[in-house]
Image (cartoon, rainbow, N blue to C red):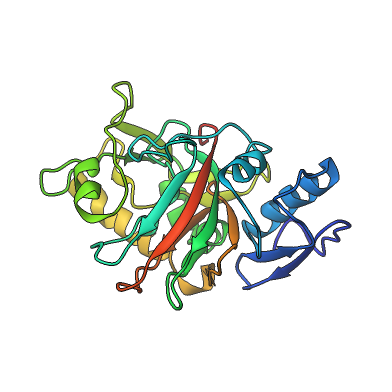
Length: 289
């Protein structure tokens, strides 16, 4: 990985799972309060690997929130209802008979918000015997692999990001209510319908540039949808190239923590007869630049 060559940790251990991004972190119990030294090394591991994974973590909503709040304020989802006693935690449940899963396309979380999510934590409560993996993609590499001409072309363009995209005349909340076992809500009245963000984003901590594209980019600023579509489609497909990705196999008690500022992810829906239940917390971020 560029930027953090041969990092040596004192309190944790890391094992990379792919050449592009992703590492399993061991030597830490997230259910317990953590020291500043351990938290600093977890932050470094996240910045170095973009997504980090922890196995065999005995988490509750309270423990998950305590860990998440070390990184920032909690971002409440505008379209999905949280758990009754813990509204900051989403229980992502796909049950037998659900027509689709939550997060089943390449995206970065809360891109439609003026201040998209900095990071996301996902803890596995129940997973199928096989299937239900999550793919992640390194958007630093996606940007760096573009030609110089393409980099110049997109350097000043903003993508217009839409959360409540119409599908067959229905709102996102209505579509979710009809297809997944989760409670949906209508967004607050002051929620912007469109948030413009640069296609090339600079990470506020590493200073590196990444491609900032995903399923929420509906069209490009000052262009029609028809004019925008070819460029969006090209960048979207480019961002998913296999050499930019890693794949994580969930086990009960696994926790993933990813940096939405430089990654995308995709929850694979390949377990129709089985149930998958996850707890998710999203951390508020800043305005992309």
